[in-house]
Length: 368
Ligand SMILES: *Cc1c(COP(=O)(O)O)cnc(C)c1O
Image (cartoon, rainbow, N blue to C red; front, top):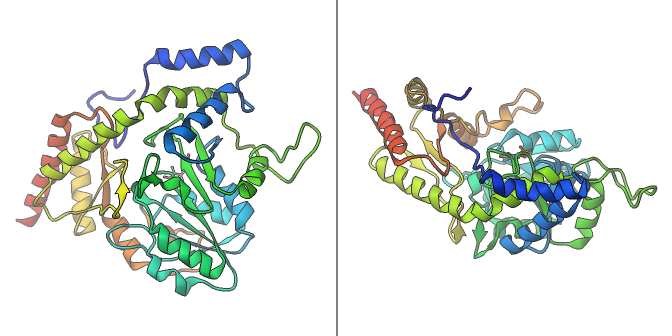
């Protein structure tokens, strides 16, 4: 049982049940609940239009498309990646028998530091796999120039970036392949779910086969494959949530603005959004001066039934299954000091004030 007074880091947006039911009714009528039925196809076409992209392939979650992308483009080589992401970015690389090569992050944008990529490239490098952290885009222009110069492929883990635009175009248009997560904790969701985006039809075709066991008709197989298909039940939820997306984003924008004004004047570092970005307000991280401060604040919030999340922690280069130990000073320092505050569409102004004053009180006590 969830205590109604509890404030978690996020709450899934649930559409009116009747909206969901009306989509489910169509699956019931057809007795067709998976294998790319009408709902999955409709969700793909609505997403294509909503996002202004050329194509979308819906998948069962946001991790499998990363693995499909690496299967196609990684070629068991070295993958230049960020230590500051969710573990799925890294584990997909290792799972596909590729070798992660970490490059540290920019201290303010928190995305991979493009100026440090070139020196990490070797003859074994096949791809750059970078994350648009909290929906804040990587420097896509510099990364694409580097990729061209060294003949590398670019994959973006855009799990957080639904609805984000760079120069008024969907961020999913960048990279050879971009992936998104529609997990229940993400800003747009289908319960579990995800998608991949590839502008080049030559890449999209093999990815399509990969996501459906490699099938080419019932008895023929193009290639090896796995099951990464979205079900009709997931698509029904997505179709019911999508019409509310702009409203959800606007509410989150107000929440971010309120946090910023409540916490103004404290010594926090806030996320710096890259220039020319229309951001989606998907997370509200604050960076403390020290880990001790973070731990004290976290504890006092927890005592009041408020549960922010240390995200991302720990820095991925420190995980036990990474054999080559390498220090990533910025990512390690940030991940020890960053805390994502609660943010969801119906978080009340009273809750934001309460959270902010607990944080400020704790810091005043600390500084005495
Ligand atoms: C959520 C997330 C994923 C994984 O997506 P799932 O849909 O949970 O499989 C991958 N990368 C990042 C950065 C994420 O936040």
